[in-house]
Length: 488
Image (cartoon, rainbow, N blue to C red; front, side, top):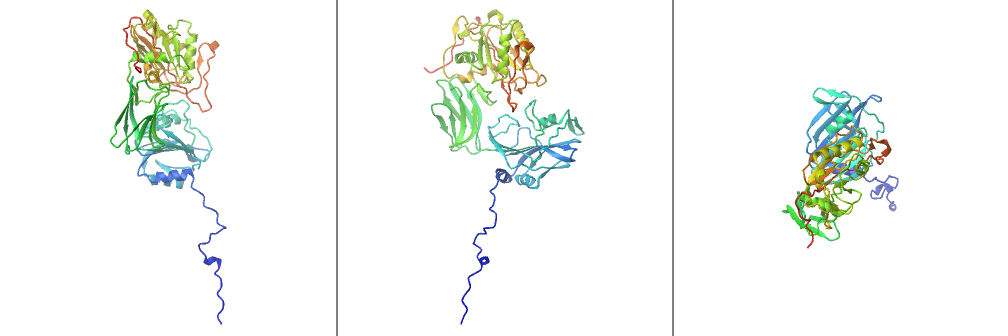
């Protein structure tokens, strides 16, 4: 008699899950990012490290990895000093991923160990946008994290070496090596790791703003199916195809206030440009409008947080004008129009508009506001000044800043932050425009007269305000230049 068959042992059932095993952890955002980076054939890397005596080790100061295309000034090089090293090299994405897996990178003749934190923070940037790092040719996502090393040690010594440039300290060397914009409070001891992913599908190449037309040039590897859309209450949008190079949009009522141009794919933003002149337009946004028309457009907007009218140039007592300068410098920037009444009438400066008067204005700003805010001075003819009122034309935002020559509104900062940049273009008849054209860091702004007590507010992140000081002034001797084109 045969024996009854036995039930198989649990070990004979391989498909049955092991309840004792720990569940697999999902990949972190950094792991997913490095997986994408590893697929790149080429990346462009810059890195810097300093030697720390207290634990006899090289510490990573900044690691920057760029995918898609190099920055405009990228070059392979290495600066080696006694206690600092800065290197730029081209590497495959797979090689970069291996650095993170091994926790170390070779810079010149030294090995720098690092362990990145898993938390990583993304920030979207438009093509050629300026910021904390050198601008990129394409729109990008900048991913930031830091190393787990919480020790802080600033290298204060001067850096000199054969075959490398000399610098008074490490921060200056790093700013030059990474081609970062000049910022007084930019430090390179934060153990930063930055990965910048570019999107070469489509970008905005150039924007030309005219009195009644917007012209946009585009480029990219995959334009088909993309759209250009101008923000506003009405839909102004154009679909693109692979051969599209330019889009022209009529603006019978002028550009809407707060205008913003988006290049997108269905619901995904690819590139954009802010067109409202309240903010500094990028270099590829051009205003093709007559200076006199720009001044009239400024006046038609009326006084506000970034615009103020003055009947005449300041005399010896310039406290009110200088308070306005300080307020603009510590805010978003601003424009002052001289030769214009509070009722928006262009009365001009007449014989008061002289070279000496303009020189006097620049000296007042230098004497009363410390440190000196950079600005430009320009005279613009706006036509017969006797009792003229500015046209109340709507939709004139794009002209607001162009009368001044593209100011990067700069906040006031320490006295040694930057020399005052003044450009004068005086005419015997016309309007006068003076504006600030450099960005600096907000720290402090005080009057040489302590009784005024002008302070420079700044937030805990040290964010910069933007200062655009513009002083358009009309004269009664200039010919009529016409009005701003408008609907009808």
